[in-house]
Amino acid sequence: MVNVAILGYGTVGSGVFEVINKNNSHISRRAGDDVNVKYVLDLRDFPGDPVESVLVHDFNVILNDPEVDVVVEVMGGVEPAHTFVRQSLEQGKSVCTSNKEMVAKYGAELLKVAKEHTCNFLYEASVGGGIPIIRPLNQSLTVDHVNEISGILNGTTNYILTKMSEEGLKFEDVLKDAQDRGYAERNPEADVEGYDACRKIAILASMAYEKQVDYEDIYTEGITKITKEDFEYVSQLGASIKLLGKAWKENGNIYAMVAPFVINKDNPLYGVRGVFNAILLNGDMLGDVMFYGKGAGKLATASAVVSDVVDAIKHKGKIIMTFWGSEKRTLGDINDFAMPYFVRVEGAGREAEIEKVLDNVQFISAPADSKVAGTETAFITEAVKGADLEEALKGFTVVSKIRVSQ
Ligand code: HSE
Image (cartoon, rainbow, N blue to C red; front, side):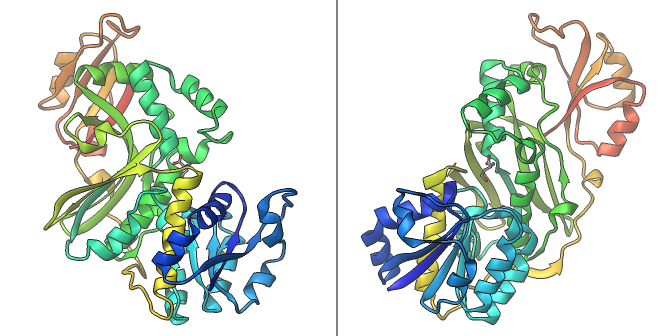
């Protein structure tokens, strides 16, 4: 029998408990051994809940029990999660986690500690919730050099942008509705400012490009400035706006960023609606491959965590090689990278002035019934560096400026 301890009985932790118990014989058969939850750690009590019989309040009970083979960390936050995970690995207990903050910050370190103690540190659920992306990246896509990864990595913001796009609603109104329905957190900053997506693209970039990408180095812009009017313009082009996490290789440099992008209908990410996530990867041999599914939610995320538990059991005494070294990756400056932009400036009829400062612009008129019709000039630029665009638009009042995905 393999004994598992779950750290944290919140949404994901209770999901892991439920998944292991509900699909127990199937999971045990796949793991090649009976899987049993021996402990659940939480500060709270849960009177009447089936977890009561295995609930403990002291992490040392788990750490010092040699019968515990696998620790599932689903507490969230960096500390004490990081310390508990490190101590577990030092005891030779494999750890499976959904904690993206901790993985982004300490992934390389914890993989090294796991290797030193012949156990595994697994984190499938830290990116894309229930979508298998970490294991495919590590174990299936072993042949290709990754040219680019581009993902819708945050369900809350994708839900908000989908509603704004399809129902013509304002950011504030959709956010409030999402909070009332429990999709968005009461403090939505990590989602709407792009910080959550930034942690996730840092993990993917560290794995794809084999060195530690620090999330503090990633240019990150959220969706709070996107307006109903931006959608009115781009929908006329058959396009939409999505928050993308991107990492790519160009001229020997690695770049990474999180920002809203205008994307066209022919982009496979265009059709990713609501709380769904997707990761589009381009390999030098494979070409495009896309991973799509539920990026959050109790059972979907728990399914990914428990798939790691099965993998940890199958690899007991063996190390699953992961090419994420601790050496820091210095990222290229995204301001040196030319991209097309969708721009709105104050004042109608400014086409001639704009053509004087920018080449090859494509002008877009606002729909006649838009409140901004006749008050602005809007256009899409050719690929231009951020600093050059800013310089060119010095004499204009910019209402909105959003990158266009190529
Ligand atoms: N807040 C995250 C999201 C949860 O909205 O995608 C999953 O990481």
